[in-house]
Length: 164
Image 1 (spheres, rainbow, N blue to C red):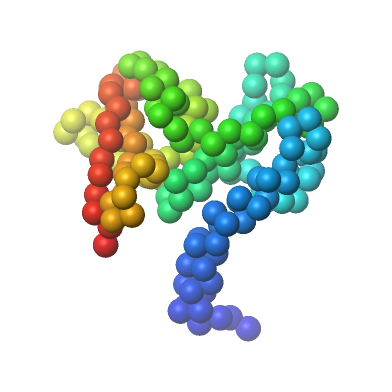
Image 2: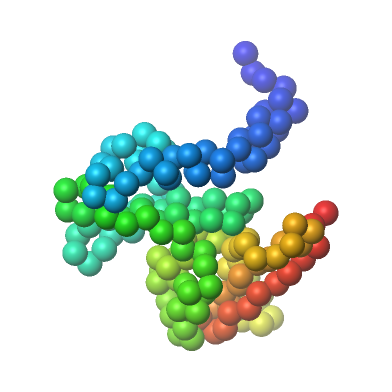
């Protein structure tokens, strides 16, 4: 039986609203040095992306974009035990984005953006993440501008918009 469109839309909306609550419960149960990759997958689901580290270990990306304001990176040691959990959308990481940085390096640092837009006239591709940091009546976004001619970071910026 196929559900009506409005019921599917309602379910998707409820899931989006409850997802951060699930994260807070699930993340409390994930302990560095104890929790296995299989347990993380059971609690958090499949990662949105797997980043392979230079030492052969993996870091799983759980981006909550475009509606959420978090991106969790969960790193594992060689025995597939959690070694580190980070919420990477933060001021310290925004400051690490440098001119000329490659798209892959920005993705590894901040996770998947909520949107990507190309501005041909400016020769820019802009990646945007919804981030925390403003009153409830506003939404804040961190943006990375890439030079489409050379491919590297051109600049970063923030944008604040009124909700609604």
